[in-house]
Structure formats: C-alpha cells, structure tokens
Length: 137
Image (cartoon, rainbow, N blue to C red; front, top):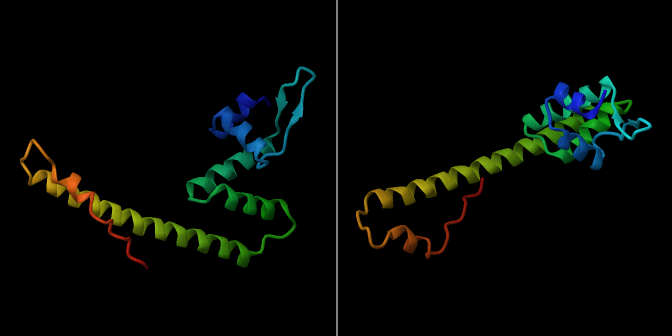
C-alpha cells in the first residue's frame, strides 16, 4: 500500500509517516521502480501502536523502548512497569506545575477584575516582583 493509503488507514498524516521513518520508529519500506514507498499491514499496526502510546502520554523515546520490547523475543513486565511509573511521575509533576500556573493566572485575573483603572493594570507591577516558586511534591 502507498503512503497515502497507509496514512488514511492509520489515521495519521503522511508527514508523520515520513517523520517516523526518519527517526527510525518505522523501518524504511520497499520502493517501487518509480521510487514510491510500499507498506504492509504490519506498518499499519505499528503506527496504531505508536499513536495509542502517544495518546496514553508516552514520549517518542518511551515508545521506541516499548517497540524494542514488542519487536524482541521478551517483553519483561517489570521493565515496562518501571518505564510507565517513571512517565506517570513526570505527568504528576507537570500537573502540579500546571495547577500552580492556574493559581497564578487566576490571581492575576482577580487583580484585573477588581481594578477598574484604565490607565495602569496592577498585574504589570505584580509581574515585576520575584516569581513564586512551584512547591515541591
């Protein structure tokens, strides 16, 4: 199947297919005499695996590791569990940072809503103060 057909079946852009080939998540396909790429059904499944892993929040580096296990003879759950726990910890850190950002933005909005001045918004002077750090775990 051609790159366009593959992309439609896997629900990705053709540029995504080319990118995954370039970074070696997909093996380069056979080529026709006119240099068209020819893919197999296995590539569709691999692309779907990659997309599902991305939707689950895994990075391309994580996915590369999972694909190596998937393509290998063994897929040790303990190692996959460690990878998933590490990623979950990163996501939880990101959520903590985002909650902090949300609090800051809400605070700035409160200043705007309670300041009727059309000349000088107090948020600008607030931003000149030292930044509050994000609390640790």
